[in-house]
Image (cartoon, rainbow, N blue to C red; front, side):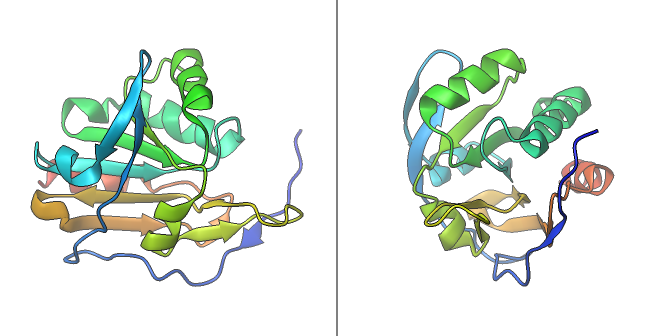
Length: 168
C-alpha cells in the first residue's frame, strides 16, 4: 500500500459562484495536436467544466480523469483540464487513460495563481502546481459552481458536480 501524508492547503482566494472566471490563453492539447486557445473561446460555445489537477502521472490526476471518463460528463458539457504538465506529457496521458477531453498545458502555473489556487510542492523549491479544483462555467465565464481542495490529496465531490451540470 502506498503511504503519503495528507497536507492541509490553507485558504484559497478563488472565484466563487456568480463571479467571472479569469480568462487565459494556453496550449490546449488533444490526442493529435495542440494550439493556443483562450478559455473565453471555449465558453463562447457553451457551458464548460474546467478541471485543475496535479501534474500528469500523480495518482490524484489519474483518479480524477478516470472518474470523469466513467461518468461521461462530456456528453452534457465541454470538459477541459489544466495542469503544469507539458503538451507532450498531456498527449501521453490522453492516450494512456483514453481521455476524450482536451487539457490546457501551463508549466509555469500562472493560471492557478490567477485563480488563487496555487500550491507550492513540499521539497521542490520553486515548483508549484494547481491544487485540485473544479469550476463549472456558464455564459461569459460566469462561475456556476466551484470546488477547491483544502487538503492534498483531495478529490472532487463528483455527485455534487454532476448535480450542478444537470441543473444548467
